[in-house]
Every structure is written in C-alpha cells, then in structure tokens.
Image (cartoon, rainbow, N blue to C red; front, side, top):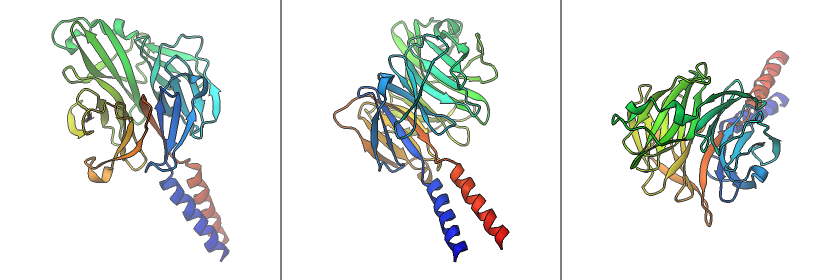
Length: 323
C-alpha cells in the first residue's frame, strides 16, 4: 500500500510538470508583469519595481525572469514577482533595452533600441561584446533593399538564440529616406565580437517586424505589426506558413510553451492569443485581455522546474530497490 501511495505521488509530480508552464507578459505603461497558466487562468499581476517601464522579458536558467525597463534598467524576478537581483551592467550605459534571450550557458543577449546595437553579457552582467552600433555596422549592407540607399537609422527590437545550433536571430527596423523596412539578421554565438559577421536572414518589403520565437524544430517565427501576421521561416529564411492574428492588433512578443503551442502579445488590442500545435497553428483563441491599459509587449514562458521530474524518477528507483 505504501508503494502504491508513493507511486501515486510520483505520477502527480510528473503530471504537474507536464501542465506547469508559466506565461509572463510585460506592460510598459503600468510597469508591471502578469503571470498566468497556459490557459490564461491563475493571473497574477506584479510591479516591476524600479525597472521603470517593463518591456523585454526572458527566462533564465534559474527558472526566474529578466525584465528590461524602457528607461534602461534590468532586474531579475521570480515568476511570483519577488526581486532577486538588480543588474550592474559592467558600467556600460544601456540604451533603451528591449528584447532579451538567455543561452544555456547563462549568456544574456539584449537589444538596445536607442543605442542601435545588440549587447552580450555573461550571467554576472560583465560586458562580453558588442554587436553594433547597428547603424555603423550596416552602412555597407545597402543590398538589403536593392536600391542603393543608405539607412538613416537602425532600430533593434528583439533577439533570440537557438541553443541547439548556436545561431542568433535579431530583428532590426531600418529607416530610409521616405520609408522603413524590417529585417531579420542572423549571426552565431561563436562569431560575436566588435565586428560581428551578420547576414540578412529575412526581409519583406516595407513591413515592420517586432517579436521573434524559435520552435523546437529550429524554425524562426517573426511578428509583423504592419500586416498583423506571424511568419514561419525555414532554415533558408523562406516563409513556409503565415498565421493571421485577425487584423489591426500589432503582434509583438512571441513564445512557445513546452507542448509547442504558440503565443503572441497583441500590442494594439492589449490581449494574449494562443495557437495550438495540434491544429497546425490554425486555431486561435484569446486567453487574456487587459482593459484600461496600453503597452503589453513581450512574453516569456518558464517551464515547470525539471527537478520535479528528477524527484519522481528518484522515487521510482527507490521503489525498485526495495522490491
């Protein structure tokens, strides 16, 4: 009977792991973060404290989240909103930090919008390298538009690292005389330095890209707030699927949960939408809506800690030894 009871507890642990992802969405206008379950239930909104204009967000390897402030700060919080640490970014002046991504080795990649660059930090926030200023690095990349114009500005938005391949993808909005265009860039964790070798992975007319996500198969997904669509890109940077968000809602942050479901933050309508992997990302539902506010932007998903699975496996091992 005792063995059956322990086995039941183990199965309960494993079940909790399977359903335990936590979704977190930032809102810069209220300087807050809202956490919830993958079906939108259990919502809890907490203040980002001294972050000042919560904007970018990413899960780190400790199961916490890093939150960027539009005014320049970066803080680490638990998913429940407890402040863990404020960053001391190596004495470097941070220019409007936005998108974030964390590598399996703890390296932090961050886009800095007003500084026109991407930055790379180790887990203790010592500067490891710069990819920028973007404006200087891309004066020679006029072929991106095939019209010979030199960009006036380049505004980095989001950045994601594919930990399986070591590839880094970044969204940049280029401002040209009379028009603008969005580009997804590609580089690698090993090629990062003062003069990073970067290439144009994807661009599409005068569209404006904001958020990025990478699925478990290595496909890159990019949110386009001009066409209100989300594009799935293969390894060659070609569109293989277009997901509609319903129109006039400015999709920004993107993320996948452990089951492969896709989530998008809709900036204009202040809502969070979900597309199921089982439907091939054709079935959309709104799982959260914010009223009386504006400025929901980016999203992070923190999986249930794997230690619960290890505890369960350990308990099963003990049961086998006692037979």
